[in-house]
Image (cartoon, rainbow, N blue to C red; front, side, top):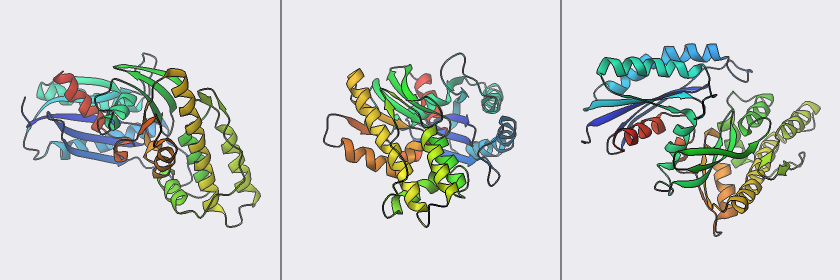
Length: 317
């Protein structure tokens, strides 16, 4: 095993085309990500439109990935489904899988297939204090997923989360109503950090054991926006929404630790890149028996780094 041996990672989520190169020593050589285009005012993409954009972007990104890296590719690793269960499927992942298969055949190297969720977890875990831990709790918070997971080695079990819409959907739908470009997470986070205080329009998000419902806070926010009651309090409403989300995550975490006895909690997925949530959760749990870790938040959002790292581990395990 030499440092010049490289693994190519590919991830084609619903909103981003990602390609990464990781060396056999675990060094990230390249991390390329290209957001898919969403028309102004729209709240998402059809799978067919997303698939087409992936097919347009992948040849160019892979061309950049293989150019002048000073090493040889010994494997390719790709996301092929949302979660590591047989029933999990989304058409967008066929773009990455098909390109990875061609790459594998062309170079005569192995191809490793993982789920998008496994990639999210590995990217953040590999940059966290939990790098060597096999057992921990993990939130996977993204545009379409808000799950509380119990991770034990290669086993990932959903033990809680949202029963209806995701945190990402609540943020995006509110953001679009406020005129933000989709996806709205980045703008939402910036506004929440700079806002001078919260408004007081919304009720707390109800927490039932390890599960919550979020459609209520989305409905409340939409009603406030449509009523004209904001009167210059747009930033304060944004901060109120995300502060209510943070409070719900604190209660869910407390309940999960009490129920499972597991005190290590990792945050992954695009919503976990929020600096506001990072600060709020650390403020609550620092100095307690609960260890909260967001890893490298730049790796929280969709990326192929986790895919490539999983490929390295699979090849040299």
